[in-house]
Image (tube, rainbow over all chains, first blue to last red):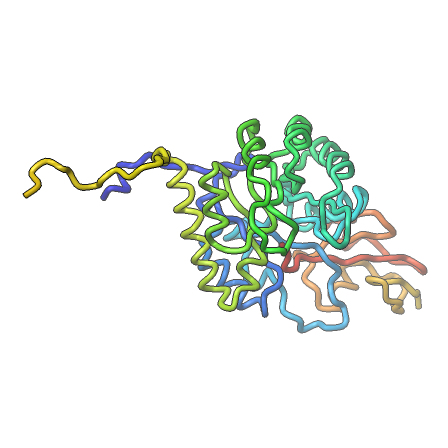
Length: 262
Length: 67
């Protein structure tokens, strides 16, 4: 009843309206069945996918699209594993040919150990992709200057890392993420490094427009329940952000009135 | 017979094989893949027109799980 009176909160990325502010990755799961169940439980209506060679020898190998229909859920093709602009562009052009996907996630990595993004190649690729008509969501470092440059180059969303991909270390530099949120006119989605549900809540309370989670769900002991935990964490964090938290005080303030004390 | 490279593997095909015929041979759904022929992306509409010749390099990709 209360909910009906609250102003509706819409999430739009590259002119696309999404119901959930949680975007989930589809890697690292035990099998496609588990992937599909976790995605369903997460409530996400956008999932990231990778582009790889078809295994031509194993004809009966199950395929992702049989478990997660691209008609029901938005596929966000990524360039994971690409270490230069050339490979990233090649991957996304193939992805576009596959099903007409113009909305893509660009990530150009620079270091195998940290999977830290190579921002020089990332910026270069963003410019080319925007020119070719792609809507590019860009995985990037948490450097506000570079984030601004990406936005100026036409990025549809800025996706700074919380910490290295798959590390589960949570948001390491809140100041930088806050600076990026404050300056950006396009959605800011924290991508990579989130470890547990509360990390996602923190990101949302800071004012992020969304979060992208893969490992924290897929590597949980019970990925399907963790998917639901993230769904609720993101909703809570967003509501908390929109509500505007109370001021912090150094001393106590009683919750019950003093008047009428017996 | 013509020898081509399919996803890095050498295979032999009959002469005058089109991309579409090759996909059928490997039981691949042409709607769910994208193809690069000698480094150039082939639009789906050209799958049935594109004939493969000796030493061609073909990359067939699809979507898999990823973060």
